[in-house]
Length: 382
Image 1 (spheres, rainbow, N blue to C red):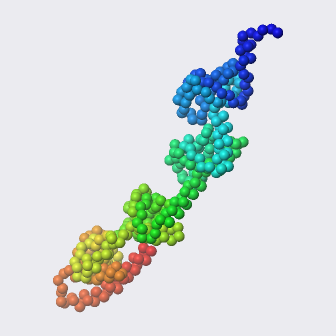
Image 2: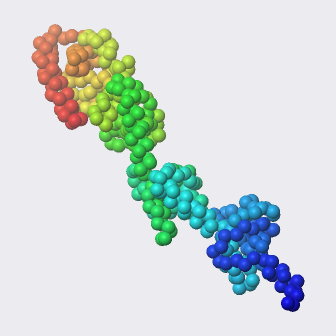
């Protein structure tokens, strides 16, 4: 038997390797985009950054150092230049696939940062396995712009697992819906009509604002935003505003809110402030053919009938008054039950005995016209 040469003995002492085999290697050199490992073979193994991770921003010198040991998979025994190509991410992906399978079977909630925002959804990576969350499964409501999720850590479950096609689908929507249902239940168990709670303006429309109460939304109708007149909700609130609101009514899952707190009710002391005979000052808020509505304070309007604007005949209020004009008048009628107040500028002048009879006749007309105008306005607001 012939003696083996040193080279032959060395070669026989080295193990044989095959593509797909998992081996343990020792790091002998590290560069930002490449790791060299001694795998006990005649050639060292090359692990490129692309085969280490899917994250292109990683600097390999920050994740490995000379002397470290790591498990890798043989990708190619000979790349044509005598080098052995290795992969770490595919080994991790194989193990990650099993991890995803367990999560899928157990309906486990996974947590991972959003690696990429795509046109049709979000991409997250769990143990080197890329999972796609379609836009329709990101939330329980449609979200046109998903960029706010970039880099954000989110929870989800695996709704589809198909390793053969490398298809892994995540679902965040069902978790969001379940959490909202839980918060809604807790909210309705906690609140009752008459409570004052804190909320955040979620949306503002022409007819009101929707307030997030932390589990359910309540509607703050435009008619409940103030004791005074509200021109438009968007002039009062913007999305994100924090408010303390009154729970006015709870009907099933619907919550009606109000900012009309009783202690701020302008009609609370109206009987004394606006007693018949008192002289008051207010601003013309709006006008009709019948007269002008004068705001005495936010939430308290009084009607100045056209026949009571001046001693001389006035055809229509706009002939002598403009919206915003300040007027001083006498209270000639106060109806607290119906919240109606009638004014007269004529009555502030010294009485003329010759005209007293005619003025008494005018007063009857005022009463009829006030009711007609108030009813017409109420109908328009409804």
